[in-house]
Length: 136
Image 1: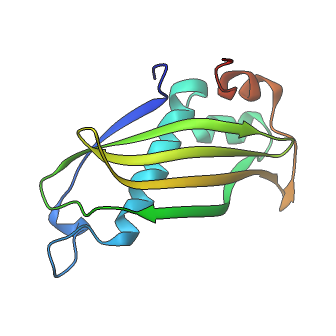
Image 2: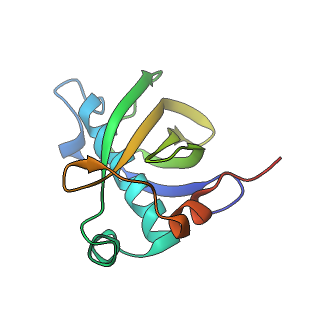
């Protein structure tokens, strides 16, 4: 985690590609899920601990807007960057991108809802403080 957000290195494996040799579009979703998970792990510990301590709290993707800009290939070393864009009562919007070096391959805006027993609940204040975007 740094001033630019959380960075997760990802290596592209054969299983991540399609018959053309490009990374299959759904693989980027897995890469970004790992980025969000590791962001939370780095700030608040394991999600399973958070789930238990917050009496069943889970996070669900509510919305994704994705721009696929350039392809990645097998053996590429990528970085998934995740930053907090906005915090609301029961949701947060994160910006994520997948890069090869400085080149942005995929850019996404992800809205994640905080849920317990199938209902939206307020993001815990302790987590809200950790996730708050830096003030400019």
